[in-house]
Length: 222
Image 1 (spheres, rainbow, N blue to C red):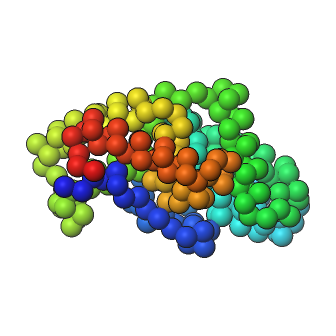
Image 2 (cartoon, rainbow, N blue to C red; image 1 turned 120 degrees about the horizontal axis):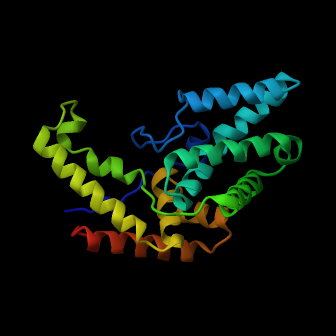
Image 3 (cartoon, one colour; image 1 turned 30 degrees about the vertical axis):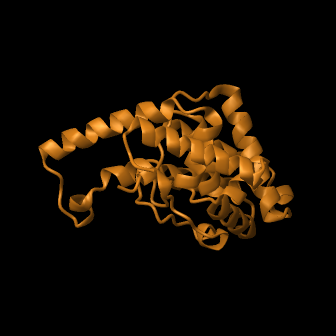
């Protein structure tokens, strides 16, 4: 059996900037149709003086939201808290739009990660984290072909997710953050290392350790 932890959605920087993940849309992603996003965008537009500023902001939001959201999921236990922090991070970006927009993309990402990290330190501590791999685990063949699982299957899936939650919560924070950024944002080890200012080899080690721990706890083959 191939472990769900041995594969993660990979997208190139170009495909990520288009704003779509290859993972199923779930409550863990800041979807484009989300009321929260609509509300936030309206606030940013009201603050704007020119359409050019809105366009520049939208470009940065689409380019970096998955990375920042994944990082925040790796540091918090609550998808709602992660969304709130994501909104606050990009509100701060808005206030520094002229400065950040002139930076190269890696430095833009580093700026946002620093802001997100500071927001977490200021008031949001990690308790437990899910990853988008939960959606992969829950999507058995019956769900993929459009049919709904029966009551017995739902109970079994609920038990699996409970075990998965507990296993992820026990991961060291560095491993949990790396795993979430790889699974949710589809980032490579090099990209995660660049965003977190860590060697790519260290990130690969953390990913390997995280997947090995989870596979052992969930009795999965690696």
